[in-house]
Image (cartoon, rainbow, N blue to C red; front, side, top):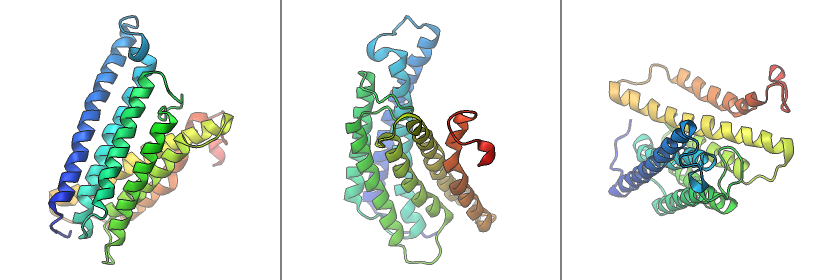
Length: 259
């Protein structure tokens, strides 16, 4: 793998993402602990922002969008220059995107705690918070894509495949899940697709990209089979987008046996 001087700016940017993600992890852990307590003692704190119906989505949003998403973006920023031999492009945009994603998530968590929820699983944040997050994710997508396009060598590591695809999939899934104007059954179908997209086309692929970097690095040996890794990538890309409909078995979605 290429070894270059990635510059202090990129490392500072990656560390900033890790620190912000750590704060959201603490917030999510506290919300999760309180919501777990209320399952066994429902009358203890069950009022207003401390009610289970509000704490549960705060926990989910803080962990998924605050901790995992921000942390994985920071890891991608840190690893891309090492995998491509190219400095991270548009660092200023990357910093702005961090503010937008983290700020939108924080505003969304506060709004949900105060009762301003869209009522959609995983996408409870109100419209104004979603707009900030979508713009921030669009900035992340631009930074990652431009960095990879600046790479001039013909060989591209499989981790880079996962990183580029996952940020695009995240942006698309979040737009469908939070800003779409579907109604009725179509809304439920779009929501399940977006849920599967965030979990299976963002968190897992981004994690697989990190794993495909760390294992050769830790073992000081190349991947056992690059072709098998490519098959794994396309398997994720071709199947995980459709798993959201499993929650509608014998319901309003198409029969899974016919897909």
